[in-house]
Figure 1 (cartoon, rainbow, N blue to C red):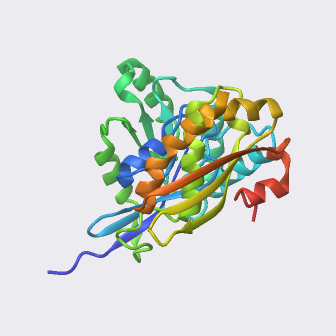
Figure 2: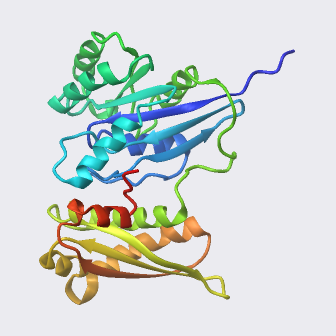
Length: 301
């Protein structure tokens, strides 16, 4: 019996903010590789999630939510999202059934109509577990008018509903090719970047609405002691003096909370005990500074 050919390929996940792209990728991978919060622009860069099967490998590219750019960081995120549509085997277009089809979704449909070219597009209608049948069908009927969309499937990234079926559809678009990453590798991001993202996620979840978009995290030092403990120093940057006080909190309470939430996940990541030290610095309007963006890893190359 002939041996089944190994199939592999890249799948870009694209959609408006907060449709569940990162949640879906984490479920597909089987562990967290992309941070999640209920705030728009949680994902700021392209993050790869690797899913390896017996005879195939899917490399998912999680992208920033597509919306209007208000600063250099926003422009960078928009560029990352659209650049990730190139040279992939499939595009996974995600929508939020609980919110219906919005203007942002319609704008993205128009972009995909032009940018997808010959690349197949699969539409996943997420949060179908908390939406009405009529709401899902309304979105489906709209999407069926677009010939470039090859499959439409309602899913729940949160509960896993239809996620296995979606994976089967995506695997069908893979091509005969190499295994790009080892079986035990789940992302292409270095540990320093993942550590910064974990800290930012905990800050996003802990701070008030007006602050999170204006914070960035830089890992200044990671050093392993002889006793096996990793010392990690990180700086949380904000844009205003008033925000610095809020991030630190009364007697340092908020900063301690962010650190205590981040530490267990970072220890799991490193497989060691971690001594995490957090600092807060003000860097006015850093989201419009090319130098600051480069220093924080948002490289426009």
